[in-house]
Amino acid sequence: MIRLATRADLPAVAAIYEAILDKDEQGPVYTNWQRGKYPTEASARTALEAGSLYVGEAGDALWGVVTLNAVQLPEYDQIPWSIPAERDQVGVIHTLCIRPSCAGQGRAREMVRFCEEESRRLGRTVMRLDTWEGNLPANRLYPSLGYRLAGATEFFFQGYIHEILNCYEKAL
Image 1 (cartoon, rainbow, N blue to C red):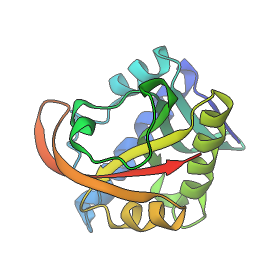
Image 2: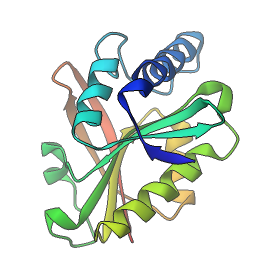
Image 3: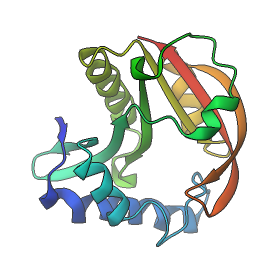
């Protein structure tokens, strides 16, 4: 089940972020995140307070987390999007994370489908997202779900790291 997160979920969400960072330290590296800077429990709390933090849960354990909103980063203006849409018609997936011990079970696909359905329910007609150019699993996943690589550009992510992010889009 995927649902809106609650305050009680924040420690488990932070544990998912930490598990991903731990896995990256062991290699291979699929994120360009930095421990203690992003993602953190504080960034999850900000999304929670905005009503845009969702969690995937099985039994009493969380297997994933995502932020879903309409916030397009300033760098999105540099991307040659091919699907025209007004800003309020665009759903944006941010920080989609699957607990490493749950990877390979189709959970990321499930989370993306949920985001698409929720965005449609909210009247959005286009999904957009970005992922680090080195995130090989994500860069394989999104095209397999019908997303088109619209372009890539340098982002000054969270104000502390310059990185190239691939930007994807899909009509809903």
